[in-house]
Image 1 (spheres, rainbow, N blue to C red):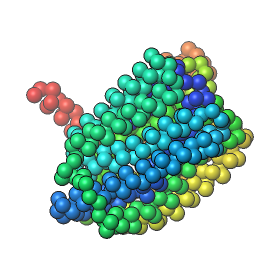
Image 2 (cartoon, helix red, strand yellow):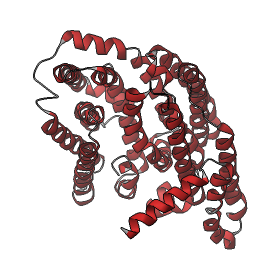
Image 3 (cartoon, one colour):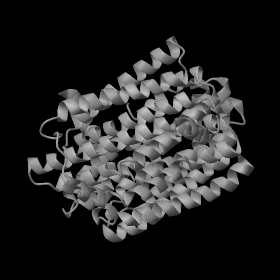
Image 4 (cartoon, one colour):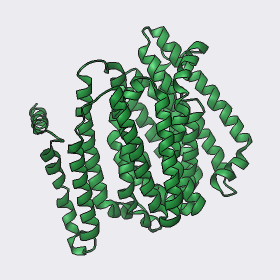
Length: 463
């Protein structure tokens, strides 16, 4: 629910924000993402490794406290400097004057969000899933409640959206600190601990920046070649495509700590492969559903100013899913060769930049959508090949390829045959039934797994 917040709030945002304002929001979020990836030198990544490997409570607390106070100082300094230079930075980022107050709110969001992300992630490293979920829901309720009041009832527009995001992160941060103070986060920082974590994570900074450019360069170049209005339309299309990323939320939160803890066990690679098949099955289901009904969903949840973005999700979804699949290829992280990720992401960013530079000029926002998906494939393919050499996992790609080809064929049949003949539209729903046939027929979902699941539900219903 919390990760799908940007999707759930689309009906509100599209009614209180013009496409140009939505485009400004997207670019401010792009800037926030870059800052949160670089300002604290990705020390949270180092914390995830050294906290897990620490043997005693005092040692664990030393690493966690050091990461928190280092991040506090880094984000605090960035906030002060950013406020001082907010006018020129705002004009440079948004390519429009008069939006300085929104940029200042974005700076405050970066500060609170950076600390909240670090603290909230600590629930994962301590294997506290209930507290992790509770913190997410608190952030969801606070963000949604404040944003609705300020934008819909008080007509604050973009400022109300940003204040809602700040309030949500602040609420999540307060909850996290209240549950983790004492044994986890103390008042002292250890420079040797900071040094260890930073030495591990600092190669990830250029890697993360490259990944950021790979993710956001489309919006930046759309604003350069077109306008904030087109950025807003593309942003809406991307939001609807990102609903498929909900398939990765539980996997990403739970799988990474599991791998770091149990990767040396001989049965772990096979378990990762089983989880991967479940992930792909869920992802393909969401892709097919959004591919068949993207136009109806966009028209239902937005105003007429955004309807031209209805066909974008079909092109963007594969790129979104590939950008989330890296967690199933953990060999590089396990080997602690983070510099390899840097070069992979730099290569992907260059490919994405070149494609966006040429395709946006000829095909507009649809060229950006294609560039996103193709560059995502390049990054994933390189990372997969290297990761398999460092930590082999027995994937069966023939099953995945057949199912993906089937889903794409169904979507294209819907778009180019059914869509052109209005009275055939009701056939879209029966097309969904073809997916289980593909999944079970190819073996991506095993019959024994289906049987066991049905037996489990039957047993639970009886008891």
